[in-house]
Image (cartoon, rainbow, N blue to C red):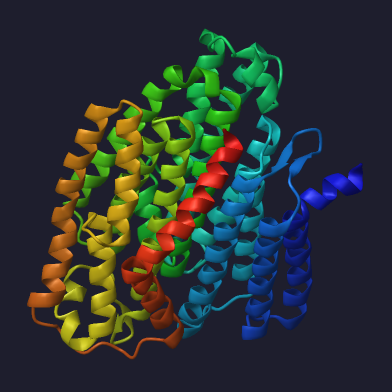
Length: 473
């Protein structure tokens, strides 16, 4: 029985063993090398393949679930985690700050995210969240001699502790009123609708998870952490952890509270609209690109939540498609920031981007593609992401939230267009440094996916997302 359970947890076992081996290896070899980071990337790729091809079922008395949803999510989470290690290696080395611990922390974060998307009860839910959060706290403050980096890590940790308290309080209320921590038993307890105690606990649980995806009004940590953390780490923060938290939220709402959709739908819609408008209007005042993209990520999480609020298989599918397409765009954008420097200083403000099309036309075109995609302009990936979300929301009867979401998208277009104007029409303040090859290739691949590769890829992604959503339904 134990071996059968263990076979369902092979991706987590692979990453756990890899992290331990890397710790010992790193302690002896003392510094980061291409071989060391390559081993971490290999472990992530192997875990992704095993997650996709492994058996399905429930293990450890229902605490861990292996299904199409977890396999789909883990493949992308582990893949984007590997990309984060690739970006971090050269970026840190150029500053003389390369350390073997970074790859280990990314692997541990990926391990926690794997547990999150496979959580079958409130206990494994909390374990996964805390494991991945502890690794992210350290990654945020990885540059210990940098004042902003230390501040980012401290803010993230303190506010993260608050969110953990909210999450635990909500979980304890649900357990107390439903009589179980397992999702199927909770679903049975709320079959005829959630009573006041369970609903109160669910609201606290949603608030705790909303912090992890930086949804408003739990977004206060995001701009400061994005600005202070190392650029490739921010690209990691903006992608894989958000997919993991969104899948976890979808699993909780669908498997444990699927019959109470009309009770939690209002909460999700309010959080979604707050996120869209906070991200849209607050982004207008930003000059730092990392802070600007922080508010962009807050708004985009609002769109993903709007799709999830539609409920049912279509709502979950739209959320998954949105998150995957968004992850490609945000990873590509931060790859561009990793590649761009002027006189040895990172280019992280709007003014730094002036005249970029004349200095680095390839990277300027890539940033243009990511900006137009985030704006939602057809036929870029971001347009299709919002199309699926709005379609699901309208199908779920959320007409007015959809209209307000479209309005927020129009407001946010201002700061994307401002960035494009700077790059294409303003004069450059000076020549840029030669960008590293790895970051350039990642940016190029992501830009090509944003358009035109996204068009043939959508059919494939749509089928995978539909199968994953059907596993929850």
